[in-house]
Image (cartoon, rainbow, N blue to C red; front, side, top):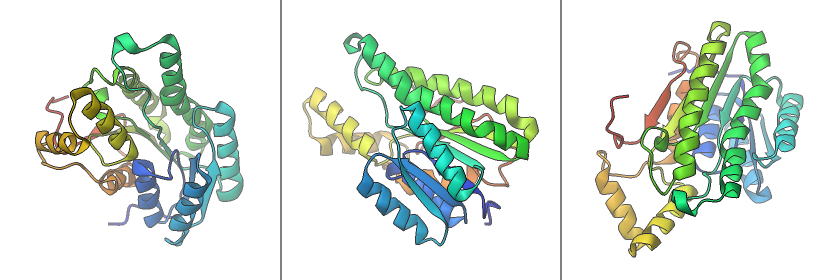
Length: 262
C-alpha cells in the first residue's frame, strides 16, 4: 500500500532507538526525508546511516527534548537541510517512576519539562507552517497509562492523559487546514524503557526480570510483548495520505491489554 507521503519531510524526536527509531524507519521506507534527534553521538550516527540505507535524505541532530533551545535548533537545522516540516512525531522517555508519596515538586517539574513541554514546543514550531501549506501530520507518542493509569507511573499517568486532551484540542483547531493530530498509546513494547520499568517492578516485588516479563506477557490478550516495528507501522499509517480523516484520536497499540471501550 502506497501511503502517499514520498518526499515529505519528517521530524522524529528521540528517533535513535525504540519506538521513535521504528517510526523513523517506517517513514523512511515510505520515502520520507527524516530528521531525528537524540543525545548519544554513537546512536545518532548509527540511526542516520540506517535511514540513508533506505535511500532517503536523513539528518541526525544532538538535542535534549527538555531544552527549548535544543528543540528550536533541531527544527531550524531540519528546515535548512531538508525543507519545511510536513510530519512531526513527538516522543520522549518517561518521567520518574514512583508512587505519589515518593515524588517531590522537583520530580513533577522535571516530568512536565521532559514529557509535556517538549510536545507543546515542537508543535508550536511546526504547526503554523503546516497550516499555511494546508497539509500536515502530528503524532504524539505517549502511553497506555493515558487511558489506564498505573500507581508506579503517577507522573506519566497524569501527563499522558493531559496530552490526550492536547491532541484533541490541536486536532480541532487545525483540521480545517488539512492537518491531523493524533496520539499513539503503546502498551508493553520491548524498548529500553520497558526494560527499566521491568527492573523497577521486579525489584519491588522480589522477583526476577524474566519472571516479570513472563507474567506481563501472560496478562496481554495477544500473549506477547510487542515489537517496536509494530508500533512504527501504525505511526506511518497515521502520517499517511489515506489517514486524512483520522484526527484527534488517542490510539492504543497494546495487544488488547486495555479493556475499556473508550
